Length: 126
Image (cartoon, rainbow, N blue to C red; front, side, top):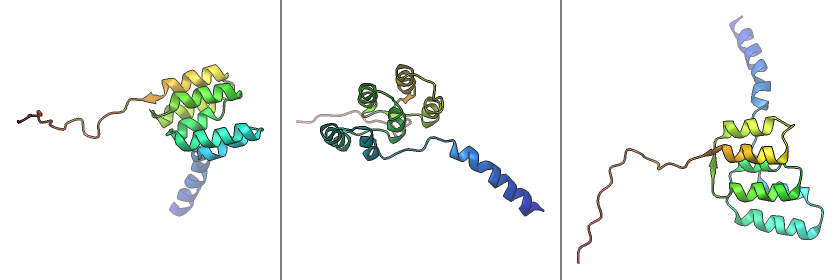
């Protein structure tokens, strides 16, 4: 009986897991472009830029290519809260501008690995 309840619980949990935002490899985002020139520019830009895959997945939901690149430029080198980004992605009725604002508000401040570290003063000797 205990195993049956456990199995039912696990099966009920599957839709909740499936609703989470899945990070996507940015290489696949270039499929949104039609022209060869646009595709090659996309691949070049995606290879050189360091972006958060969760945030890039939300940027890929942008309808217009200009707002996609605007979103892309705003996420370079930033870290984000995946739970906040999930809220940006789940509402399909957001406009491109609203989604961009949501992504910007989901930024997580970068903190040192150890905030309690003791720093030593630098002494210059000649």
